[in-house]
Length: 319
Length: 313
Image (cartoon, rainbow over all chains, first blue to last red):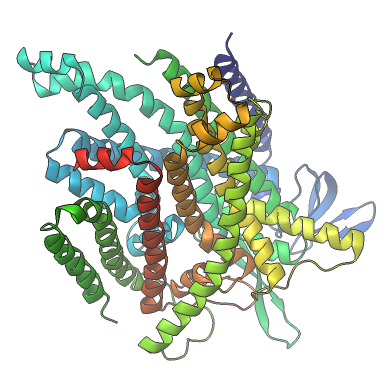
């Protein structure tokens, strides 16, 4: 087995292990009763000492809610957030809608990128110039600022649609370039001239001669795009841009005036769990910030490794 | 401010320059290579103005006191230039160390004939780690240094001290360094397989000389292309890093001008659409200048590109 093949198999193995490990963690988190990740716990007792949230990693506590009713004993495997909600449960329940949003955004990017790539690869010179020009406008924007502005601009209607469009706008160009390059390669092949001479229709030509060359690179792009979208989702969540509503926890400052000490997002997806990162860091409580961030990084790495493994396979099988 | 007018003016200047230079064959190719950047700048100004204007109606009311009267045009220009200056220092440091490390690691891997191949998975992991997680790790490192030595190394928060710039540049430069390493190592490996490299080795040149003259030099155009992509990435991450460290540069000012808020503990952004457009225009202008410089440098390093571009035109 050559070194390139070996690297490909290593990447595939590492990616698969990460996916399986994450799936196992999700399964454990999803089997927990819902109340541990939705109810706000005011505090807990460990060996007779009172502990306030966020609870640390691997802590087993007798918790009580804001009305001082006992909630029972629970092992917080990955700790809790500032509201005492189990982070393992939150991450597990947040991963499902996150992956849904990622799938939606990647699908939109694929559609837009494919259409733009077709326009660049097959279109007239004018269409190609306009398509490339639009791509240049997008690439000249700081991607995060563009996503924020697009989501705010479209936020008057459906929030999910605003997210899908805002996040898709910043990434379709890579797909368009890949599709355009493959189409331009096919157009330069002798069989293209032969097909034209034989009178092959455009749709038939696309199905028989273009699609097989485009499928492989697109399949490689999907995991890379998924990785990028997941990280973008996390960055937006950190900047307090998220889909769901939020609970604000207040504290009293030195001057006696109340201020917002923390933000707890309701039914959060993974990126939204990072909305309170800044306050956790300022308070020196890193687990509630690090746990969801590491979960996202692990998932993004798994997607990236799968993409690397697929890229090696596509190159191996390329004509 | 008349942002549409500025965008249209940039468009008009670019088109007029193209028209005039079309009469000069010697300058025409260069004009064709640079004109897209003028159009890019014009498009970004108009697009930003349109989007920010649309977004203004959808923003929620700020949770704290209303902002003071919107600043004048001179105030916006002053605020933009001050933020641009601070961000320019930060980006110069970040791109400097990121490029040096990424390029150096890639060249070292080629020099040692693949002995440093372990850097490839390291670069992959660094590339995938979200920027804010890197920032959290840096903050944890600061805490541990303080715990071990008693020395405060944070550089404060919300200011632009030397230490603050250092830490922000460290975080900002990590992903571009990983990107430059990955792209440059691919470019260099392609050159290593070239016939002229085998010829040079067969002639008896040392490996070090071959790498310097026949591998790195021909790959410089590709290296510059990788560098400009990493610079674009860095500008993309700039708002997040500056927001994290509360560094008063272009990125943080932009997010606050878009009405984003820290949401907690007092500091709130207030929507200032004109300032937001000005800050985006400043970032876009910076990117356009850098990209134009790279296009010129690429043609100088690799004369074959001039012929390819002329043919494409």
